[in-house]
Length: 464
Image (cartoon, rainbow, N blue to C red):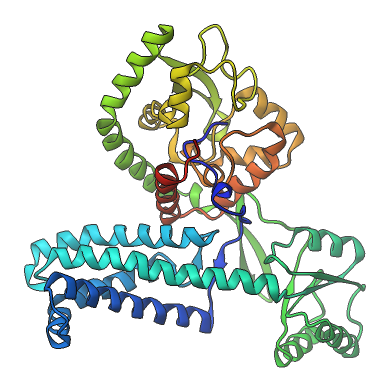
């Protein structure tokens, strides 16, 4: 299960697969902070570009054109959802996410300012502002992230789960809560009167719980009372249906007459537009990378031939989209008398050649998989493909393991950037948890963020 990028846990504590969500005042506060940082970056860029500290000169340059890219950056952040949710799992990731969004925005702006020069007179100011914004906006978001993590650790927010004993334990054990949160359990069969509602809410208040989960749907009259009283007490109420869990589908709520219906819908990554976007994304990256790394292909091939002879490429059957198998390509990094894949790779594996060790350390052994991407067998981003024998074993032993095959396997991915390069079968549950998080929360910007983090981790954080 070799990956192209090293684990995020090498750079710090391993994150939980939990997106950071913004709402209400928090979202507007973040918006205001970003605008302030963008303005500061634009003013600093103009000051550097025009070699002046004159406020009037800098303001004139801003009014002339810099306001355009500031406005477009804020709009872009809103469009990609950075004021609703962030998939930055670590403090460092905040900088990666901001860098991804700004690079995504700078390219079309350079084109816009080329065809409409009246909008901006300096492309240099745009690039300088983008660089300053990566530092300022990314740094500010990183500080907020660190502060929120510290607050979660020092100010745990307990929750209360109430309902039938078996359901309470089921929901309590599966809740994805911030680190430091505690869960209180109350066993009850239902609400007979509004007095029962009041008693439960008072208990919730005494425990300082901000969220109450109930495992049943109360009668309508009691439900109204529960929500009204909870609102006045600052408690959020959620109904948890333990018998229904989201998986390889999304759940929407539809109304039919007076009744509410749960309507399963395909995950976004399984829709036709998503498949088209991912294919275009794969080709847009794979083709130029192949062209740029052609000399590396030649050097690697010659080095393998000189040390151990043919074959240069190793071919192995792996399981891909919807359980179909394909032949994955890698530069051969082991002695030809050893069968790659017979056992799990370990540090100091005696099967690895001297050239192979270098190729693996630099992830050059993975480059031929770009050919798999061109063939449509793999994607740039996705779960790592596994050999059929292990897939059969894991599907028998690990619930939902087959859901990994709802998308094409990838060269890099969510589990690859947050887990170690060398794994063992004991890590399969953790790998699956990360892969399912990616599949269930996929978006094109998420793919871009993963590629950006992969690049940074590859360039700056790889171990010897």
